[in-house]
Image (tube, helix red, strand yellow):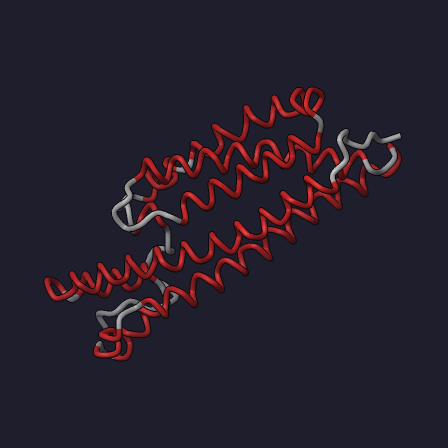
Length: 228
């Protein structure tokens, strides 16, 4: 049996908390809890903020905060640790809490009471399509930058091992472990390439979110539409 991991099975998925911070799956999941802790209370106070400052201001601020959080995470490197990552998560969570509730109100309020089922379906559809497109965009950019950032020494590995390294950072670290002491340099290169790919994908999303923030600032109504 080959000692190298199959590119599509037997290794964990690429994940910053597990691959870079070295967290277990449970600890990695726990590390993301601050996002929920930021989103939930912010979403609860958003209607009050909209009444005070207007939907345009709240939605724009939310999107700018989301972009700022993603950009902060994009600046991290292999040695940054959890606290800077936490700062980016909290900023992004605050931005999601402010903008998501506004977006839902805008969609559901744009149609009459008899069409709320259509509004709800449209709200769900836009979220699902946006998530799918965002994941595809980030995955494509991440994969391209990750592979381009790997050192030429990967070509000197056995073909199956090199294929695993190029397929994912998690598989690359597994290959480095199998190499023992010789794998330390490969592990460092894989982690660095992972961060390069993560940074590039987050910056791309930042550009999209900033465009949405500017659009909200210019086009969003001051008060949310109300269903008749």
